[in-house]
Length: 116
Image (cartoon, rainbow, N blue to C red; front, side):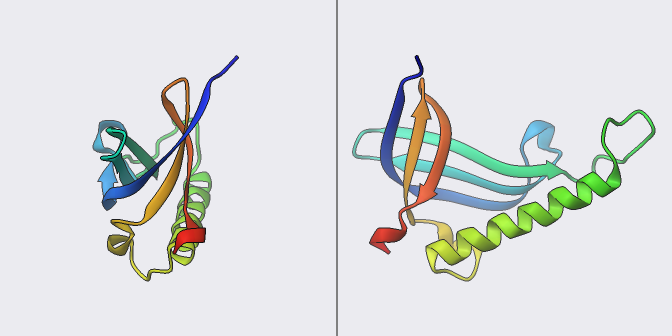
C-alpha cells in the first residue's frame, strides 16, 4: 500500500522557460524546500518546445495536441497566480505550499491559500 506523506514548505525557485527532459520543454519549473524538516523537491509542468523539437511524420503527437498542451499550461499558470494572489511567476518565490509525497516521490502539491 502506498505511503502518503504531506509536508509543508515554500517555493524556493521559479522559472518559466526551457528545462525538463533534455532541456527541450517549455513550461513552469519549480523547486520546493523546507528548512524545518530538510527536504527539497522539483516539479515541472511543461511541454515540448516548438522551436527546439520540430514535428515530423514519425512523431506520435500532432501540432494540434501541442497547441492544446500550451493552452493547458497557460491556464495552469493563471490558476497558480490567482491562488497565490500574485501577478507574475517570479512572485511565486516564497509562497507557502503543501507537498504530498507517495513513497518519497512528489505526487502533488498545492499553494496554501488559507494562509495567504
